Length: 118
Image (cartoon, rainbow, N blue to C red; front, side):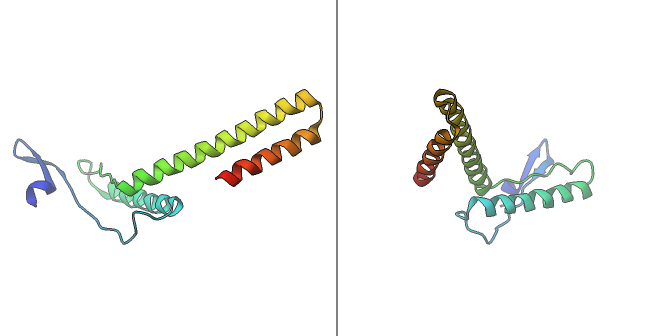
C-alpha cells in the first residue's frame, strides 16, 4: 500500500520503506543468522556509501536479527560466567588445599558437570 511505503511530513517524503523476503527460516541456528545479518550489514553499508548525502542513512531490521543477537549475547555471557566461576573456584580451592593437582581435578569434574547440563 502506498501510504505504508512512505513516511510523509508536510507533503514531503521523509522516508521510504522497502520489504525484502529472505528464503531462510526464522528458526535457523544463531551462527547462520549472525552471518546473514553481517551480510545485510555489508550490503546496506555499501548502498549507503553509494547514495547521496540526503539518502545515505538506510538501515535494516528483522525479527531474526533480534533473536540471533539475544541468543548470541546469552550464550557468550553464559560461557564467560562459567569460565570466571571455574577460575575463581580453582584459585580458591588451590589456596585452601595448597594442592594444584587436587584443585585441577575438582575443577575439571565441576566443569564436566556444568557442560553435561548444557
